Image (tube, rainbow, N blue to C red; front, side, top):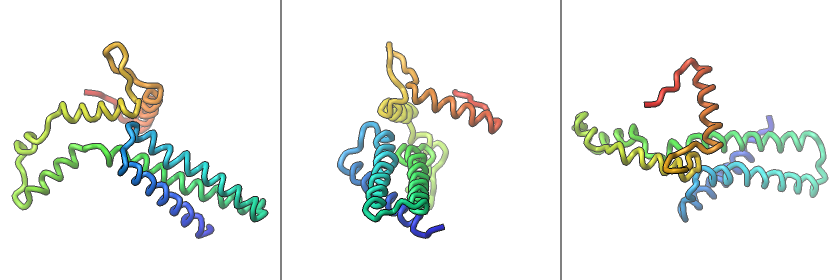
Amino acid sequence: MNPMIPIFGGVLFFISLTVHIIIWRIKKPKNDVGALFFILMILPTLLLILFGLGFALAQGRTDLVFFSSLTAVALFYLSLGSAYIQTYPVVQAESPSLEILLAIDQKMPHGLTETDILKLFDNSTLVQKRMQDLINTKLIIEKNNAYHLSNTASHIIRFFHLYRKALGLEFNVG
């Protein structure tokens, strides 16, 4: 494999990640996952195609090796971008598990009792924040005083049903 493929893909990912951080520092988009998808997937892919084709035309490169290398860079980059987008919701959300670990860390070396930990959490706050995330990312929509799945959310749920079924896991709620 050409060693320049992961280098170019990594540099492109680093640039996209920097753009993502700058935008979030200025003002976090309401639909953060949609914005992240645009910043990390759509925009870099379009730029890679435009610059790749521009370079090919300027250099007179029409050989299969050049275009297969360009495709490999795109696939490597898209793999990095996809992995990042998949982990982003976990990182940006306030995870009860992480909150527990942080609370215990603050009370070291003595630690916290289970009662102390349970006093730290209000379930309504956790649910409200998750609901607002789902509304902001347009995965749920309010109609007639009830929440409904968007088309995107319906596809996501179907995928997870199939995935859990393939793993032999049930999909129980509540």
